[in-house]
Amino acid sequence: MRVTARPQEQPVTPNLRRQRRRWDEGEALPMALGCLDCPDLGTCGGIRKRQAAFSCLDDCCGNPDTCDGMCPNNPIGFRDRMREIKGFELDNIPRASPCPAPELPAYIPYIYHGNRRAKPLDIEAVALPLRCFHRPDGWLRFASHAEVEATFGIGPHTRIVLIGSGRDKSIEAWWKLSERRIPILAGLRALGVALITGPNYSMFTDEVRYNDMHAMKRIGTAWQEIIAAGVPGGYHLNARTPKDYQRLAAFIAERSEVTDVAFEFKTGASWRKRLPFHVHELTQLPSRAGRSLNLTMIGGLTVLPALAPAFNRVTYIDTSAFMAAMHRQRLYLNNEGKMKKLSELTLIGQPVDSLLVENIATMRARIESLLP
Image (cartoon, rainbow, N blue to C red; front, side, top):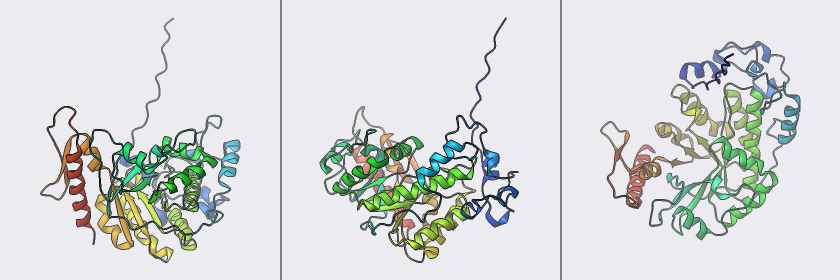
């Protein structure tokens, strides 16, 4: 008898058509019927999407024994996650004294590591990954600014902005540190960190809405811990629906300690057809909050001119200058006004310091030209 192994299920590749059917269209579409009797309708706001659905529970995986999300069909996991965040509402997040960030430049390059360079990068400010500043056991990796300089190849007077957003593995590792995050944040304050953007816990279009509300509460909690430790923190804005943005605006309006916000355009928000929704909501945020805000944006070069007038200050975190230099590529602006890359011939093992400096200068000039 010949045994044929069952083929493994292949992951579904995201495509625009499938994603668009899952996007919440706000008042343009009727609410799903199952949302009307949901006890969490007031917080969630319901779902309004083109995909046929009775409620968000249609996206339940149906496997409570292996489910790692927050779903009512997994009662034990649902209970534990509800206790973890102390409810979905944002108003029970503890208050903290305002801790605004210092004046930051409009352009800051993201430096991932100090490899392939021979000289310190002596510029006004750099962005570094938060995940590189703590160990899995909860200990801070660096005891002094000099150690940070040696690891990332930066100058002694360069200010540090830490980016908390990233892949799920790294941001979940930050959450799992639990109470050990507090001494780490105290150490980051001692290092003189200028700003930390909070983790961007993921919100998925093909999962139940409870996961979204769970992520929003964790984002708020992580941000509060940052500023409570005396470190300037950017509240990471992550939302799927107009109701999510309304909740964020109401929270910010009540909390004077929210002076800086952050947004990441590298993942779902970068879809061309979905981008206008997020830009519209972001431009409305300061007026809804009733005061000016500072925005730190990771990516989103094309929408910078639309966002800049709505905020008191915009800081653009750029990854392209560093990544292009690491691949020995030179950035340039073509005749159509688009940033392009050109391979640069170098010797084997030759440091890319000068190439990185030139790429940073090119990107800085481009960003400054887009600002009012």
